[in-house]
Image (cartoon, rainbow, N blue to C red; front, side, top):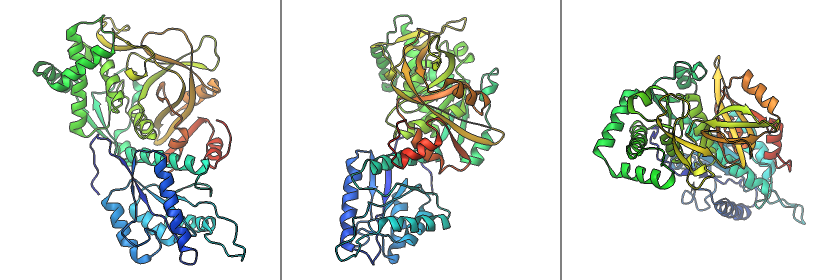
Length: 486
């Protein structure tokens, strides 16, 4: 199957294959098919539902003669995941054969059964069917997700369904991930060394490298020739930021760099960028890329600093967990809070998305660390609230993704882009981060996507979820419908 490497965010497509078995009530199965489709549509997720209508008169999966037609429909629509709601016991061999053929994340679930009728007969037996389907899926070596047998209107079903769709979207974007690498890592940053061949062999992740000379030439050409895209970027910077400390020509060049990076991403089919942001770039074009990075990240093309490939992978996963509705921010984990023992400063020179700023007009500034003080940093505090902090990383051939929840707190002023956060047990976090395979870089997002990424890892061979808060047991309990508060 051809892979679409474009960075345009295509709508998520769900293959909807409600199933029944002939010995149970056909009428009740049809009724529940309609109720379930109506319910998942009401969740308001940005997805297309590809159903079985027209393949047979019921739009249900039960007839073995329909197997080929159903597989072809799902392949033709290039669905991203499959949902097999058991409207009664279901036809477990068909579920497994279709799931095997499509090879995308699979969800099974059935609406909770009513009590037996007065005459002792039962209409559906959905729970019993789920047991059977789980066994056959395992025989076919198909990985799958299931939701606890529960009512259509239950929180358990809504929670599990939304979590699965997010996880399947992570898998979708992970499997087609290509990263634009702009130059090599800074020579002093051994911590961001990655194994490009291993990423390709294990996960199919492609890296497209270009040089700083190439991005310089494209930037200067865009700046000289002008375009509507460049004009829009300039207007955005001037209207959104306080640029009083830099010059007009600086704004234009920063805008040209942003446009150039985006064009390279589009030309190479890359969904994320990792750039050598210092110090050669400011020597050759006189600006820092921090604000350009921030704007692109806001536009759902996350950019990571210091050519951190693993950071770019993390950012795509975390962004996809929200169905690409929220921007990430790429941060150093830097110092402990002076008063809060579980507080920590998340910081970078000036690359956090502008949309996250607490200021009405955040500052476009000159870099405060390097001697030349080149312009191009987006400085200021970003909003707090609930966050997920994540880090995909690996060494010695083993890969995992660190996951933890945090919340924003007050703290001292810092230069650069920053936010102070509080976690449940900072010494535990620190131990995990130091002992690895992680480093000081992390990706944050203003949502709790930990159960989503945890579930996604069940479908990504060679990648282990490594949650610190909540724990794995707490995540699994929550997915089962526990009222545990984490």
